[in-house]
Length: 153
Image 1 (cartoon, helix red, strand yellow):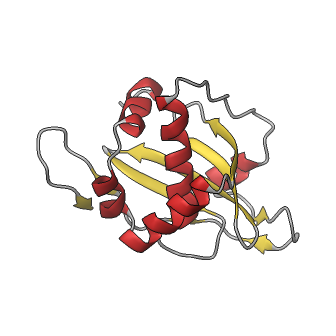
Image 2: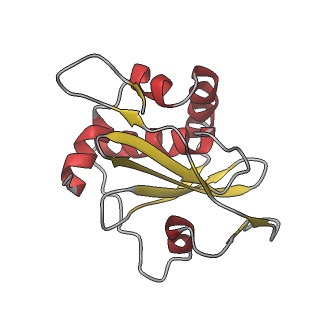
């Protein structure tokens, strides 16, 4: 079982090539823009070590990123059905905080983003009040420390 500390190390060591293997290079470029524009907020960690945050875009979305079974997986409330720029921005924001040695708070038990993480109910866009259904990414990046092979599983 991968612990929160193990996951933090994996996020800290995440490379550009690994991001592009998980999400298409254009998605990574857009995620970087969102990260550098400061559009990621309310970064928090779940009890299992996944990272969740709100990301401003056309609307405000909640994105979740985790290492599951040795690979990256994400979920977002945006309508894009694959790994999205919001998830990439969240991964980059968390990596940045780790590299700067900054604490990331725990996700509070009463935080409404828990519903998104569990896939229960429907997520509400904070800006518009629209109902958005979170969808898991069908692509999980499998990372192996002893090989250079990375890709979707």
